[in-house]
Amino acid sequence: MSAKTTTINRFTSYQKIVIVLLAVVQFTIVLDFMVMAPLGDLLMKSMHLTAAQFASAVSAYAFSAGVSGILAAGFADKYDRKKLLIVFYVGFSAGTAVCATATTFPVLLVGRIVTGLFSGVLGASAMAIIADLFSFDQRGRVIGFTQMSFAVSQVAGIPIGIYLANQFNWHAPFAMIVVFSLLTLAFTIYFLKPVTRHLGQREKQNPLAHLQKTLNNRIYRLPFLATALLSIGGFMLMPFSTPFMINNVGVSQTQLPLIYVIMGTCTMVTLPMIGKLSDRYGKFATFIAGTILAMIMVVVFTNLNRVPLPAVIVISALMFAGVMSRIIPSTALMTAVPAKDDRGAFMSITSSLQQIAGGVAAVIAGWVIFQEHDGKLLHFNILGYLCISIMVVCGFLMYFINKRVLGKIHYQQTEKIELVA
Image 1: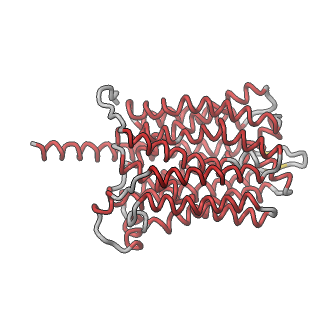
Image 2: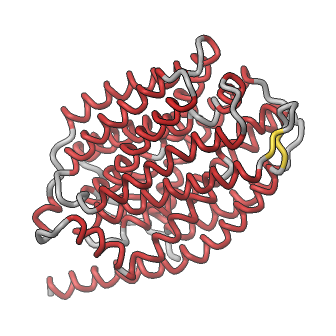
Image 3: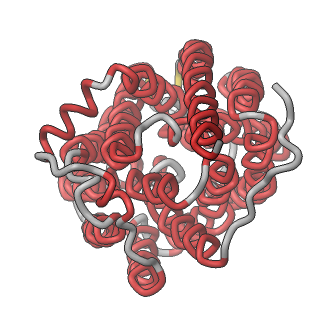
């Protein structure tokens, strides 16, 4: 595939503001989800949870997010995307507040369910806004920047959350997220303009009928399947990665912030590069390169024994870089699949599938993993091999999706040229 070296569209001032706002919104969502992993060992020990119970807390968030995304898909193209973003961000903040005040496992479970119900639509709303406001050859860079929320959460959010949890208790990180979310909400209300272009491009339609039409579209079925498998492969290791590092590899709770800071810093450097590479050299080529790196590092990471801390950091950073090199180009490709008047519904459904698949992955991990009395996790490497198998399947699926997207873009460009002529 030839490199695109001449036409790289620049961003307007307002587009830059939108990118920052969406990145910060994404940061709070990602931090709320990802903080469960580093708090996993602390939660399991302080609340006397089994591996299956902890997995249920993680999967409850994912399943509720998936359900809400499906339910909202019919309405996603019916309203101003800014209003939807704000409404669901308020609900997300409220659910996180429940987690911050929970004193029993059932209450924590309810908090995770409520948070998931609202966060499930937030990610889809952000992706629909990106698809509405940015051209296809800009989206790799946009998604690369917004996905820096993963890196920033590792550099700042998670280490600060772990520090607060060590100094106070596990409630403190959730309280921090609530405060930050309320500040972000205020800035979003003030700076983000209404996103209503799609309203004039679609005929009036019953929300349930719109949802059914989107689900029944044969063109969308392969991307839906790929989305689910990408999420299963990506989330399967996450819930137990920190307990594995602590109990199997020998990392201490106090060393975790350092690991996440260094990993996040490396990711902050690589993510914009991944976005530029996907725009310049092709989404699919970048995806395959990231898949190969991720597969190699998953094998290494899941078979670790007690090794020096620097080795743990290097291996973890390379594995995460490989995972993100798959997420950014695949997400950019997915934004080009739906028709304009289906974008909100399509993104809601894909977001739901991501969340549900993540919940399935957590449940599978809970079934496979067994924790001995001394805390050591067994069968973690089996999860790694399952992830690799799914990555291989995803590679084939993304090949056909990429071929279809490039054909669609070529047709649209040819049509424009004929209209001009």
